[in-house]
Length: 222
Image (cartoon, rainbow, N blue to C red; front, side):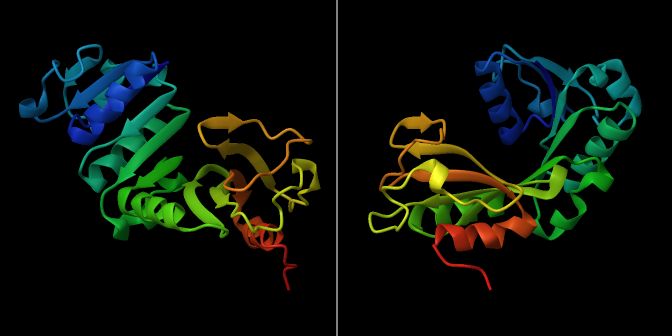
């Protein structure tokens, strides 16, 4: 898959390295000549240009990229790149970095953003997930469809330990997508038993999240 990344700073380069490792074709676009150094990610295609310029996006044929990532350190730049990619070129998936949490409210579909990633929020969620057992934790928010990725770790005394997946009475608009058990990633088949220390990952919309929290704590909402 061809992926365009706006911004070749530390974040953009790190993303590029990961994607190249997964076998994707990566295009790095950077305005600052001082950051152009193909030796960082030699497998990527480097372009010295301003990704906010319509002519630049036309020249690199950004419409051929199923995914565009706005990864610069400037929120204004990221919003412009997202808006142009989505509205002018019809890019299917636009992912944007949020540098200042105060700007988070701007990073939505109106600005062409499908998935917004706020580093402070992600770090806070990871810390909460690392220290919280038995409580539902929101790890990530998907802009498209207003759905969330949420997680719960089952403690040894959790009432659901020993039951099976098909015994979970999940609320509407909720799906159990995987179970993490040590180093294993388990597809949640109906007869799969739930064990202590299992990490259950769900996708749920906003309305269903409280109901899911009640189900996982074995309480009825209301």
